[in-house]
Image 1 (cartoon, rainbow, N blue to C red):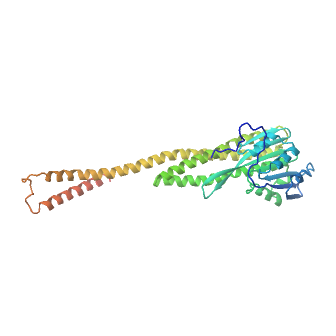
Image 2 (image 1 turned 120 degrees about the vertical axis):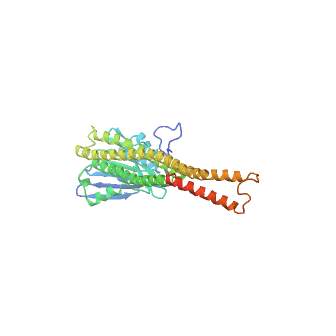
Image 3 (image 1 turned 180 degrees about the vertical axis):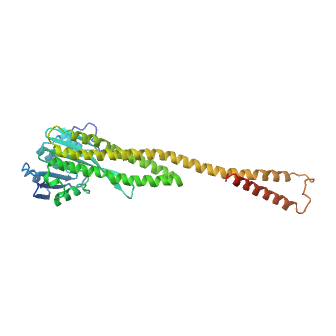
Length: 349
């Protein structure tokens, strides 16, 4: 859960090591208000053309296995080697760092596994410059940016008429929105577990509860810094973020606050669910003890009678009578039924 991909101690700074073994996919989009050129390229040098032609220039790379590709990309766009190192050594804490002429942004994107009932995260890194936007995704088998591309193709919304900063906002908004369905699934699990703890608490329920608490802690760890990220972008003084885009970023900031509120509510619920579990177990124990106490109380006088008539005295009343055994058993039965009726009347059982 807390595993990190880190270089061996003593490794020189800005050392790039391959992440995974699948070849990355390179998508390149150039567009303006009237045209859109989208293509998938095999050579990273192909995307170096056309930069600065007044169009939005978006390079999207899925996969981090090709170190040479990343090195060429960093050299052409002047990306700092330490930032490129953070791209590969995942997971990084969500953040935004300002470099000369561009922003470096890191966000963790959650996904919900229905079968396992768990959350996994994929890192997405963005480089936002004056005339380019570069995005790098960790897993080449997933593509979280496809909804944004679909909007650009259709021309819906403001995307085709705005610049690189608005595209960066749209991608960040899409990544933050991935948290909502994950929290919805977590909420459903919490509700079902709460009902289970009230009705039939088991050791497996306790295991599920601890797993939910760990998952919430992991989600909180990856959404909490996003607030600081948006705050830094909203207060940008470099000119990379326009005033119009700042207004949209405020909406993303509100989404992050909403997510934090939901997570804190869930954490409070899971904390109280431990008390529910202990109370339910205690109530079940009390129920068992009450039944055992009633049974023991009924048999105390019966045991006394059996003990008395078990003494070896010939003068005991009824020992010479042929009906003595049945009279004794009948009296014991009446006594037991009478005690049960008394307990039920007093609502002890």
